[in-house]
Structure formats: structure tokens, C-alpha cells
Image 1 (tube, rainbow, N blue to C red):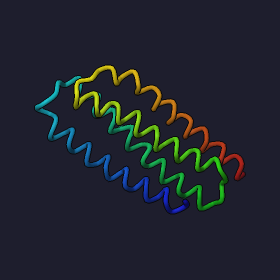
Image 2 (image 1 turned 180 degrees about the vertical axis):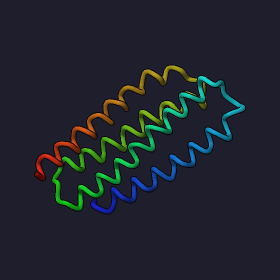
Image 3 (image 1 turned 120 degrees about the vertical axis):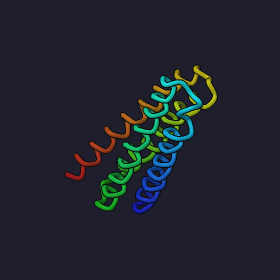
Image 4 (image 1 turned 90 degrees about the horizontal axis):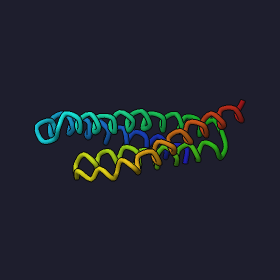
Length: 123
């Protein structure tokens, strides 16, 4: 899945740019300033971790072992749950989704720890 992580990261980055533009232009007049900040937080973490997936792709080319895959899947899951829950909360008004967001945040942290373990093991 070496080049696969590059593809996933690049596609998620493209989606992040699109969602950022949607938030800045499409939501500005439709949601409160507070909810726009929430949406922007989702986009920011989405982009950080899409770029992290490019690092996962690079690490995969260096034969960094199974921790690289753990990192990649944790980042994908984290983007979906952390950013996705924030996007849905803003778009639907379902504030209960804020209770789901930390699960995605934990997955993002797991991704960084797994990437560090991959780097450590590759030495």
C-alpha cells in the first residue's frame, strides 16, 4: 500500500481544500460565526492529517513495517470521525455529535504515536 497512502493523502487534501472553500464561501452567510469556527477547526485538522498521510506514504517506501499501516488507518479514521463529526454538527445542528469528536481525536493521536514507532523501528 506504499503509493496508496500517497493517493489517499492527496485525495483527502483535495477534499480539505474544497471543504475549506465551501466553509469560507458557502457557509459564511448560513451559519453563526461560532459554528463557522467549528467547521474551520474540522478543515484544519483534516488538512494536517491529509498531509500526515503523505508522510505515511513516504515511510511506507522505506519499509517501516506494520506501524506505518496502523498510522495510516488511524489518520483516515481520525479524519472521518474528528473532522466528519464537526462538519456534520455544523451542517445539521446536531450538537450531540460533539461527543463523538474526541474519539476521532484519539485516533489522530494514535496515528502520530504509530508513525513515531515506525520511525523508531526503522532506526
